[in-house]
Each structure stands twice: as structure tokens, then as C-alpha cells.
Image (cartoon, rainbow, N blue to C red; front, side):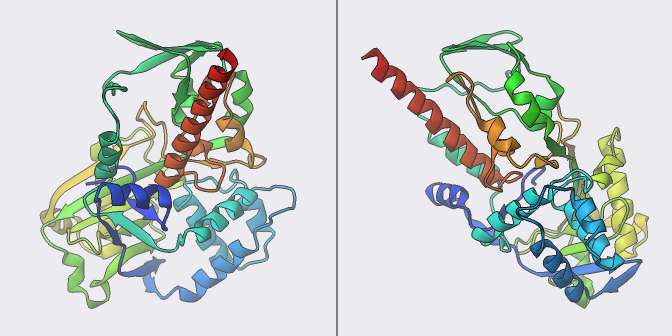
Length: 379
């Protein structure tokens, strides 16, 4: 059961190469989409085509603006606008009045470059990809310390101390991979402060997402012939508008997705309350009585990433004027602090696992080059 990342978007080398090394199987997402609007099942192919055309016209060189402003002056009909808003709020987990149109165009072009319209799953779960990375670590040269919360980073040029509650870790350099949400809340204190990073942090936003996976005795939805090969279900439900199956994997699981404003509606709710909301949503969408739906359930899982102190959100996006913010956030400080994580990806792959991996490789390369430069100076 995935509680965080689930999909592989396109064919990024960062994941494909790791999967090959670890013999981690990838399977394509299969099945068709269904849409329900105003309580009715609809064929929305023509609508999606209009939305695609709308995004194809996103400005590349004009002064930056919010997607909401771009949409308001687009001249499109209301149905197209609402579908476009649902996409930005759902897929990007973004506030349309904040997200940069130029960043949206960059992200779309980056996605096209790796066949982003094709999606895959790791059949054995993303944990196996993490294990592949861990297995590559030579333990003679590296310790992996678990369950140790860093509270403070004390640094000066050529020296970093990572302070946890019961231990300190000293090194000449450090790679910082704290999520944007953690950086924004200052829950890890930097001494001295990273004033040169503050503007970049302010121009990036952390998108909220709530996902719930409901497990069933069988794929009951397949009793309806039109749902037999279901992959994604898109609706205008106010609680959990998007759902998907495990196709082509055989598990009888439906996962609900509430992002952006739909996620904020669940702020402060307990896991049980979130799951209850998801069950109510699915019962409405499937037109099944809630007690009947619960009879078929065998389990339910969720995790509130906004409330998690180690993430404080799902993934990042650039606000208006923030096209270069990720690049600024990624810049090393005093040849001592290096920065990685999806929010530092300036190639259009923020919010993705492969984008995060790419930044880790980049930061490691920067650090090694710095060390080599220091050795040459000493020689």
C-alpha cells in the first residue's frame, strides 16, 4: 500500500536505471478514464482536447502571471475553465491564483520530453526502489542513521554540525534535503540563518494533498460493464473528486485524491474523519449506500502529509515570479551547504520522484567537485 508517491510519470532515466539495477518491476497503468459531472456520467473527450489547447497556449516569454488571471482573460467557456482549474488544483496541488503560468508551461514541456502521458507503477512498491539505493551504499564509508531528528544546523565555511536531541554530527560539508514545507516552517534552525535563501523559499509554495486507499473484498465496480476496465475516475465531488484503481495490478483497491482546496477542507481532521469523508465521497460517486460500501471494505489507509512534521505538504510549485526560485534554492552556500529535494529541481520535474533523485545526483556532484578543488589548492 502506497501512502505517498505511487506513479512513475513518463520514462525518466533516474528511475528506469535504478529499477533495472535492482530488478524492480515497472508495469504500465492501464484502463480507461470515466468522468462524472453534476451527478451524470459524461463523455469528455472534446472537453479534454480544449483544455489541452488552452495549456498549449500558455505564455512563455510574456511577463509572468497567475494561472487564474490567464484563465480569466482566455475567453474560454465556463466548462473548459472549470476543467482546467480542476486539473491545476488536482494534479499540481496548486492554488490557481498563485501558481506561475510560465512554470506550468515549463513543466508541460518537460513532461513531454520524457513521454509523460504514459504512466507506470512499481509493482512491488516504491520502497523497493529506496532499498535499491540503500543497497548500493558501501557501509565501510557511510552510516545510515535512522529515527534521529535533526533540530539545528550550525555551520560556518568548511564546517557543519547537525544537532539532534541526543547526538551531534560533524562534517566539512552537508547536503540539505529538507522538504520545502519544513524550510518554510523553520522547524530546523540554521545558525547563522540562510538569508540568501529566503526570497526563493517565499516564491515557492507547498501543495497540500490528502489521499485515501480503500481496500475491498473484490472489484465490485467491475460488475458494471462500463467500469470493467476502469483506471481513473474524475468527478466534481467536493471532498474526493479523483479516484483510481490499481490496474493493471490485480488488487481490489480504490484510491481517492483530494488536492489543493479539496485537501484544505480536511485540515485538522483525524485519520478516521478523513477516511469517513472518502467513503461518503465514493458512495455518492458510485451511487451506493454507504453501509453497503462499508460491508465490502476490508481496510483503509491514509496519511496527512500536511500535518507530518517531516514534510509539511505534498510537493512544491512556483508562484508568480518564481520561475528561477528553485534554481536559487539549489545554489550552494559558501562551498559548505548543498541543497537537494524536489523543490530545488528547476528543469520542470519538481513534484516528482525522478526530479528529486536528479537533484540529489546534482548536489552530490557539486559537493565532490568542491572537495576536489580544495585538495588541488592544498597541493
